[in-house]
Image (cartoon, rainbow, N blue to C red; front, side, top):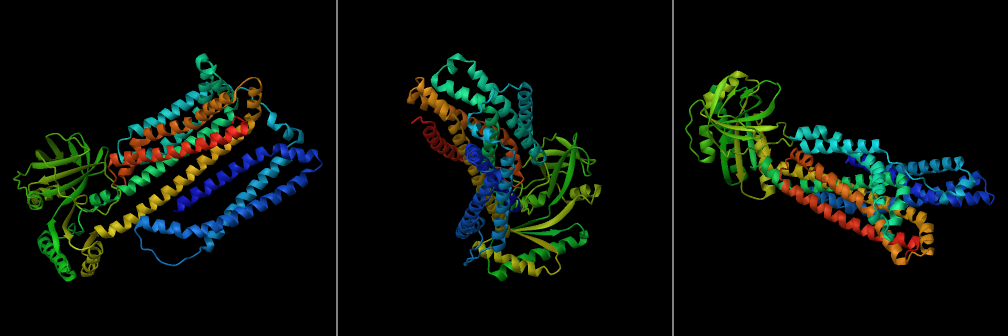
Length: 598
């Protein structure tokens, strides 16, 4: 939420400064006329000060009033998404109001200083004739086109070739930076090259609806390019932010089942327990779980226990070493044949050097080694018992599940490096009752553990935490998505309205020399279509190229459902396109009305 607040602050400044630049650009002739009529610059400056004060007072007071009225509704939405209880009552954050007022007061002061600085540097004659100032035809900067293509290609290649989640996390911001640089370069130089290419195509260019649009855009592309690039980047941000947070929230139940498949998981560490005391300690832990269930009046629907071991191996060649070195980091989980048979119902008989294997992101030969111990793959297991895990982000890039003959094999592996092989006694329990009753079961179980002998992992308890976090993600994602969308719409609106006033005289001349109103409207649609949908298409390409990297990043939050993310991304794109098309229709109508096309 703090990072979200910083983003909102940044975009508030950008939007206010952008809107101010549009307004002042439209007022240049007015300010020049004031000077010609006898007002000195100090009088005009005083006028600007009073205008800024009135605007700031209206915006800040009105904004705070609207914020207070909507704050309870927004809070209820956040609590609903986070599955948190609703507390009745209404509170107003005076510190929040003071911070908001201070922020926008500073931003309005900043716009005033900028406007006064521009007024002091201006000349009346220049202000009066600013609307008729022409633009030179921009040059095609081939070097900038090549730089844009290279940086954009490098960003795409980084996103498309990423292999694991942690590599994706390490290179994500590099890929974003490369794509942003490439976007600005290609829109700045590539758009000019594209328009010149269209101009050199007689079949396309020498048509009334294309001639005026291409010629007008070409001479204004220097100032258009940055705006189009901003629209493209903001559109990409909307699509990525909303689609990822929606997919995380939609896939939360699946993530909970993967991370916490049982209602309660009791974990007893055996790392420092003498072998002769293990059996007694394990039986005592199991009795405590059963006693806690009896005291809570809960019916145990599933009760199973095992003594798994786990370690981290670094795979090179055909050997896993238990010390850090170059290679693929692999989480190795060990289970004896007895435990495997009791948990799954599949009886297996293995020799000391035989193992059953289930490998993820790992290709093993028929015979491999853990340190100097050889193991031969006797079969493949597809139903390795699931274990609760309180870790949200896994630190391994591959997983290996092994069913070994007996405890002597586990001990033999542990003897190679006891500090890296961890053994534990785990009891998994599923209970009857409601979610609240299952959650209440954990408290007496923890109270029975006076000496902190074991740890308790609860599905329901972690569900509360994850819904809080993922609900916050979704709330912030939708909020920032709306902010980015608003920024996109306002930039498009101000850009098209500004160009409408600039094109007004040109289209009047075209109509005077014989261009019909229908041809004017056709030319306007051609120009606005090119300006509108070039950034949208480019944003869609950006998201498609980033899709593999985003999938890997979502795996850090236990979202492995690529189909779900693809559906969320497609749905977000469709909704965004619908809103984008609506803005296109409204802007085209306003633009046409300004230039006199209808």
